[in-house]
Amino acid sequence: MKNKIYTHIIAALLLCGICTGCSEDVFEEIDIMDIPVLLKGTFPTEGVTLEVGKSYTFEPKLKDDTNVQYSWMVNGAKVSSDPTYIFETTGLCQAEITCIIANEKGKITLKTSLKTNHDFTKGFFVVTAEEIGFYDTQKTAYYPSCYQALNKGEKFNGDIYAIPNDDKLYVTVKTNVSNRDHLFVIDKKTLQKKSSTSVRANLFYSFALDDRYMLLAGHSVYRYDTKSQTSVKLSNSIYPFIFRVGLLNDKLLLSRSYGSNDDNLYYYDLETVLNAEANQLPDPTAISNITQCDKSEFVKTADGSIFTLYSSSDDNEYKLLRISNDLTTEEIALSFAAPTTKWYDIYFPGIVGVSSTSENFILIPSKDHAIYKYVVGDASSLASPFIASPNAGIKLTGSGVQVDTETQKIYVLYSNSNVAVYNYDGTQVEVIELSEAPQHLIFTTEGSN
Image (cartoon, rainbow, N blue to C red; front, side):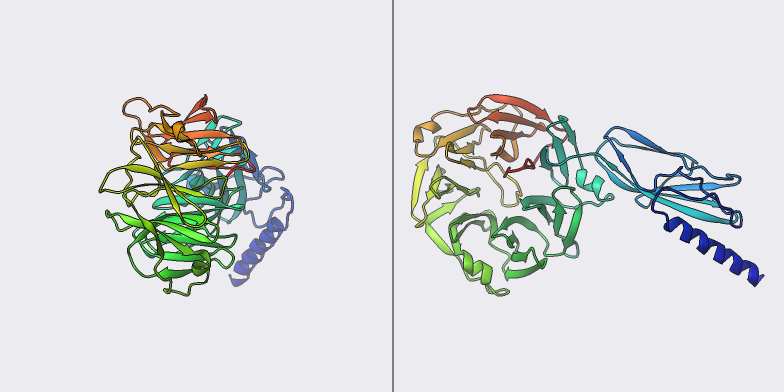
């Protein structure tokens, strides 16, 4: 009896050695103790690549399929027990395919991979509330939930904020759960996760300080080292929240808030933030006596100045604020109200700028969801909307307005899941219909922001 058991074990080991040693999809027609034997060339061990919308039929052939049972799994989840399995692609995907074929004598396990043929350099990523999709500008097609599809079903499990940095995407997750990953590092070319780490619950925002360090902000402030993939907690206090950061030479400008209360604009010396020890970040310095009722982005223009929006709850006036290199300020009155923002918003309609040798302007969203264009130095350019308000019931959503400087196109994000595309002169190019409301776009064309 023992000899028979040992013989079965040796036979199984020999078969495994034969299967795993093949560099091509070649399985010899062998007969070891009557376990299932795969015929040569009937299973794609080297992987399968499909165009989106196409299907592939897996149909392994056996020398003898009498009393054989099949078990098909996709990314570890059982999907079928039929002899043939058809994998259909309705969007972008990458999957591990496993087929276990067994009879009363034993079993063999077949494995391969399957992926769709896609190119992330021809379009833009669409950040939604908890996912990342992709719009292919060449195929004029939108593919939702790409991160989940290309990472074996993994989810972020929280609202996300994403920024590109070199060849990666850095995604922070806003969740009130501490024992969960809050920062994801993703390959920008494949959208596959490279790493993730637990930092702190309720992260709202991230900002690249230089080519190595990032600032992570929310209920606390962290400095993240992209090289060592470690973080240092710089501030212990829950308040104030840091919502947006701008870099003015060696100064780090801060838009902050104590929840629902106004707060001043502040700045740090960049070196102070880069070199601060754990929990030793000092208080920042206030810029003049300016307070913000609603937070806003910072935009740099051709002369090196920084612009931001501000208003105070005292006078309810909205102004465009210019901050020069010496931290002196200049106010430009606006005849319209800016969108109201909440302290818990991750994305909100903010200003965006274009600064080049030929173009130097700032796009400003209004509370009635129009877009104004401020040509730097020309206050009269704010007299009327650059892009009119949408139809009733439609609002700006997420970041509101963005610019792809590589293609010189303006993208306006609306709550009806549409993205309107304009040239720099305001002529409309197209309207892109997505299947979900976008929060932010990340352009992938080489040279794009």
